[in-house]
Figure: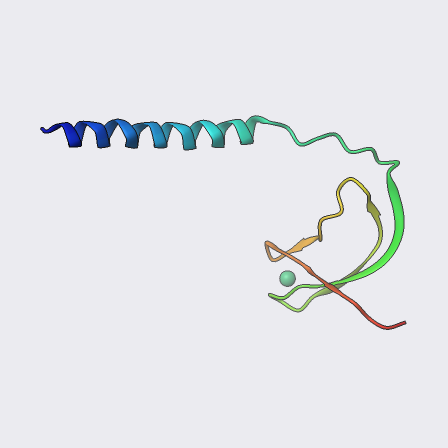
Length: 82
Ligand SMILES: [Zn+2]
């Protein structure tokens, strides 16, 4: 076993440890509390690019305004002229 193999094993072990520690920290951190009062009225249509389903959001929380998910994918906003 030469020095290069030992160095590669130590670096590989450190990388695996860092990835696992970061993953565990992310999974153990609870999401921030959302205030249900922070809701505004909207009328935004979304389209699922996987199955074609559409929905209209009537209100959204200003702290959590990511597009809704369908078929495990984020839905695409649809802009329609009024
Ligand atoms: Zn879908």
